[in-house]
Amino acid sequence: MAGHFEATPGGGAAVALDEVEISILRSLAVQLLELIGPGDTPAEGEDPLAALFAEGPSKPPSDPALARLFPDAYGGPDGSAPEGTSEEELRELSAEFRRFTEMDLRSRKREDALAVVRTLDALSPAGDGAAVLTLTALECRAWLGALNDLRLTIGTRLEVSDEDEGENGSLYRLPDSDPRKPMVMAYLWLGALQETLVETLMP
Image (cartoon, rainbow, N blue to C red):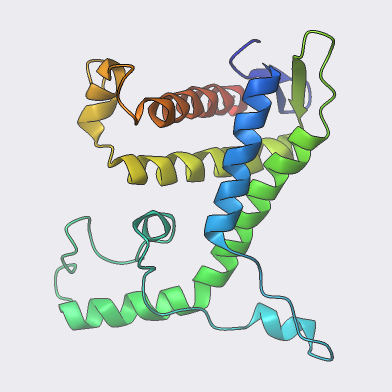
């Protein structure tokens, strides 16, 4: 179980984590929460349901990491419009979709990251400093979302490409003197956690 998730009865999963790993995961989840930003809370006397129907932004975030977490809904990676759709129409469709979905997406990503923090805070390390994190099926899905968001964010900051991640990719050949090395190691470790967690959820 050390270093990777294993399935548990009832559709959950468990992994052994030491104090350093717990601290790193919690710190990264908190930084993700700070990046996503706080939720909108209704003002005193305001109808709480109104927040559910509040419109979000119509333009992509300027921060590249946030833009990766909240991409435009239409168009390919090269930004070209689908056949028969002008670029202007594409921008309008993307803006409308973002306006009515981004707030909800931010809320969901925020809840996923909060689930990571809460489950880690509930851990009780043993005498050797290690602890077994046991997740329910619902918590597994929140962790999957948060791990994916963390990897997208870190990968964007590191400008990681598909070639970098291959078995012979540059990420595996960074010298210890490279200032990116700690973040690259965290990126690869998060990927391993994500992969084994996905495997536990497969029938």
